[in-house]
Length: 192
Image 1 (cartoon, rainbow, N blue to C red):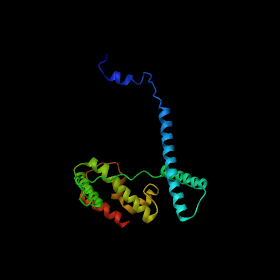
Image 2 (cartoon, one colour; image 1 turned 90 degrees about the vertical axis):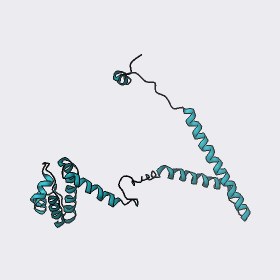
Image 3 (cartoon, rainbow, N blue to C red; image 1 turned 180 degrees about the horizontal axis):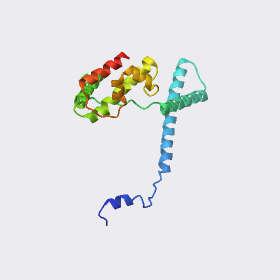
Image 4 (cartoon, helix red, strand yellow; image 1 turned 30 degrees about the vertical axis):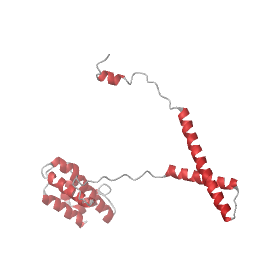
């Protein structure tokens, strides 16, 4: 008997394990059940169609009808195989700060307001959350308006952004965020 320590936990990988083979009989049985179910459905549909056609005074070759129904069943099966997965259900965030109407924009703005408020006192949070988004916004504005990014043409990007914004976005320093600095940065990006 062991005491159930870490050695026992990690030594399990050293012991050979018996690989459990899936039961081939169950697999064959499930395929057989599926085929029997499909055959029953095709048979019932064929009987209904033949009866309906005879009531109307027309007829169709039974072999042709069954071939068409099998083909239809194969197409339905293939469509199920390539169907996209179901869309995930969105959980309501009513208790998590979102409005009851589910206004995602309002929740995102509220989250950014909270991040900016906390960034006043936490330079790490500013460097992790605010600066990367400002850099993405600046790159996107440069790309849309001028056809380049900060990485593709740093000289022109520095001219357009200005020295303050350029040094804030490219400098590794982690200084405290000031509201007037953010306003200056946003004004510079709006001028792009």
